[in-house]
Length: 373
Image (cartoon, rainbow, N blue to C red; front, side, top):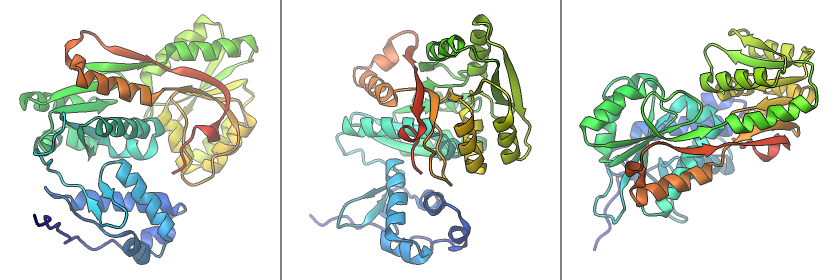
């Protein structure tokens, strides 16, 4: 039987200027190629730009393009076979394939790019689903899409049976109603935010935070500084953290970020006379890592810092060889449990949520946990 021809008519690659000005070539190239891939997706798979074509166009090494393609492959946008073409995945699943079910993932573009735990969850569960016979598709979205029926229509076009929504924000409620009307089941996974839709799976950090703070209490810190922001908040964690600090009678104060220059704010933290510094919001910590990686590296070298929402990456600088206190989640375990429950149908039959407890890791090297991007 003749092999089905794959369409190659793609829009031209954008100008190389964005790459030339970027501090981190791989990160900038990945973002550009992700945008190109999403804009060029059609119902069926099609050939994508080759590694060598991209390297020649942007005047970057082939190894840089390969790293960017590896990220897009993990995200499910492209697939590569050695000695063959790079394929841009289609929006339409081939229902003739023998698969258990078709699963979709709404993914916030900004959160996926900046938050390591957010990105890790998607990579782990997509891999686990595919290894065990499921088809999976990621729908990257901006907040405005999830507040209308646009995102639900995309999942209907993908012909998914189930949607797994990680960290569903308040905009998820609208899309969840549209999906329910279409007969598409939704599984929520709550991480560090309030559940705006019913969440079948929930991550708990209270025990890990208590372990961390009990250790600090034994070392008699003069005062603990909590770094918070009204825009990048982890409201659930903040409430838990405040309660445990008061219960253990550990003195604490808040350093509030109010959109001043990131580097100046981090430098002020570095000079504070405080026993410990805590970041509860991964979004805020990641923001500083993107905007002022050098200042963050120096802060971690001069102060004892705890990151309650997992490790952070530094896209424009090498991860410093420093020790930090972390609250981490075994995302592989979470992925395996969710897929197990999908296979045996317990994901929709058992009452009440399934909880996953995070773990405290004290004085560990950040470089051993932070992803290089």
